[in-house]
Image 1 (cartoon, rainbow, N blue to C red):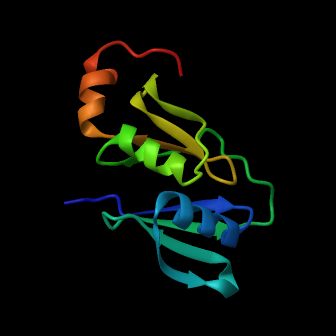
Image 2 (cartoon, rainbow, N blue to C red):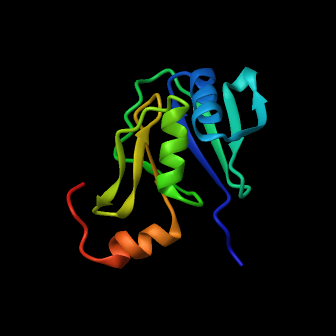
Amino acid sequence: MMKFDHLSIPVSDANRSRDWYVESLGMTIEFELPERRVIALQDSGGFTIFLHEVSAAIAANGCALWFQVDDVDATFADWSARGVAFTHPPRKSFWGYGAELADPDGYLIRLWDERSMKEKGALGGEAGPD
């Protein structure tokens, strides 16, 4: 068996990114290594993202992180009410149906759910504009 378990992404400010991922996405802190400027954050399924601070300029380079949620429309409404800023609300796009936001360094965060993807997304018909 093989399972994708961790992902490391460079960030310009580890503390700022940590706060954003915890406050906006609800991730939890697994551990921190302040002397190395590394913070490990975990989602509810046990997947860990390592945020490592680098001194060079960050370019997201088209990197996107997809998070599956129970209901993308309800999550969008709840998070918007909490003040989370989205790039776009749930809609059909080239990758299916979902909402999109960006982290402090410009990494795209895409939210989707299985039901909406089948009914409204790539599996449910032709995708519209990005």
